[in-house]
Image (cartoon, rainbow, N blue to C red):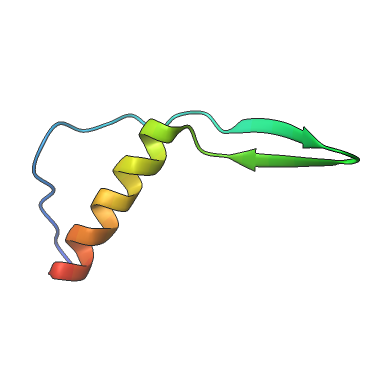
Length: 47
């Protein structure tokens, strides 16, 4: 079992955002959610 302790305040998962690029639709995470996910990835790699 893997156990991680993430220091700091939790950040809620934001709803995905959509943008249209010509004929195609692209989805992306809001900047706040994206930054927090990167923070968690860094902590997980250190463990």
